[in-house]
Amino acid sequence: MKVSIMSYSSSLSELLESIGAKEGSKLLVESEGRSFAGILMPHHDFSGEDIIVIKLKSGYNVGIRIGQDSAVKVLEHPEPKVKNKAPAERKEGLPNISLIATGGTIASNVEYRTGAVRPALSVSDLADSAPEMRGAANISGRALFSIFSENMNAEHWQELAAAVAEEINNGADGVVISHGTDTMGYTAAALSFMLGDVPKPVVIVGAQRSTDRPSSDAPSNLTAAVRFCVKGGKAGVFVVMHEALGDDSFAVHIGTRVRKMHTSRRDAFQSINVRPAALLDKDGNMKLTSEGRNIASGKAAARTKMERSTILLQYYPGMDPSLFENAMMKSKGIVIAGSGLGHVNEEMIRLIKKACDNGSLVVMTSQCLGGRTNLNVYKTGRDILSAGAIAVLDMLPETAYVKLMWALANADNVDEAKRLMMTPLAGEMSDRRSVDV
Ligand code: DAS
Image 1: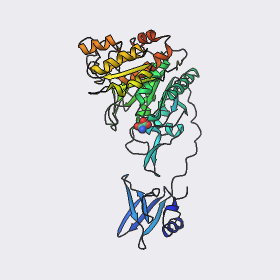
Image 2: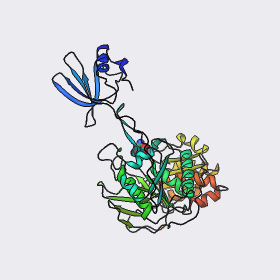
Image 3: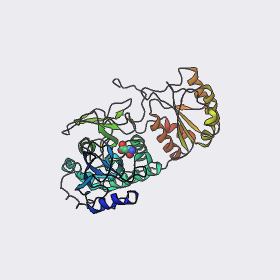
Image 4: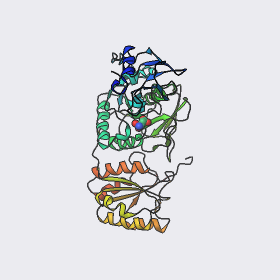
């Protein structure tokens, strides 16, 4: 890839070309009495024509003016693209785990061009990034898409659910899905409802640090995910991520009960209102902490229809119904993350009634996340019930949003959808408070 030389001065362009410097080359630069070593970054339009930008080992970028007295030397050229390696041979007697890649930090590396993290790795690179994974099972896989999870939508969930069912019906003993962390909880909930009583483990795994960083959590998360597939004995949809900041414990979260609770910590994922289904340590010793369904034989089936005219609103004080009337009157499904036990202001209650009378299904959840909604305690809640809305105990708002899309599309009518919403299907709700959460 040629350096974007048109934006350098002619003298600097000639210098870089003469030493064979390309974007991604590691350079040693001496200028104005100082020396720097780092990766040559693309020349930005806002950098001067005699400025080169290099990314230092610390990850910071520095702009260096190249003048007559400067010296620039190439230390290393960019790594050539890794050719796909031959698939590892299958080992008799080991379980067969399918790895489906969808993108996210776990399958990314820092792109020297922009310094940003971009989805990059192939499935075999991913499998090779965690050699212990190959020791525990025969890993085969495919990349379904390569996107950051903020760009996921119902179509991706549908394609993913169908691919998981296909892998299981083709003999996989479990499926591991590498995925971005931002919306992983939504995808885990979607697969939980679409795959229903799936007979094998389906484990979604991500990373908060890209694989090219020493502190990457990708290899250990991937290994823990495969180990749970192999040893957990449990069927269903789960999320596996770090349980603590260190690399020695991993939590297996139930797919409808997990949320990313921190923007950057490696133990960002927490189970809400329930305990994780299992904990694993760095050697693969496992402690099952909740019953759940056992692995079974039988086929997987994906019921993937989703009602897209469904919205999720976060209530806030002073919420003005005139700003939401149009959206709510056009939506068949409306989830509201209300305050406290599931409350909104009086103005919004009138709009909830209007939407219900218009045929929408309005579902109240709580932005507290912990605990259960209860619309029978305060007058506010009773007015919301009278307006036609329903509450769904301790279901997470985002899980309720995904479940409502699925229920409206797979039920024969709104009343049937309402009944589905209030019936536990995939561990997403419980009317009993767990003692220690
Ligand atoms: N943007 C984030 C995502 O893809 C990166 C990550 O955390 O995986 O969800």
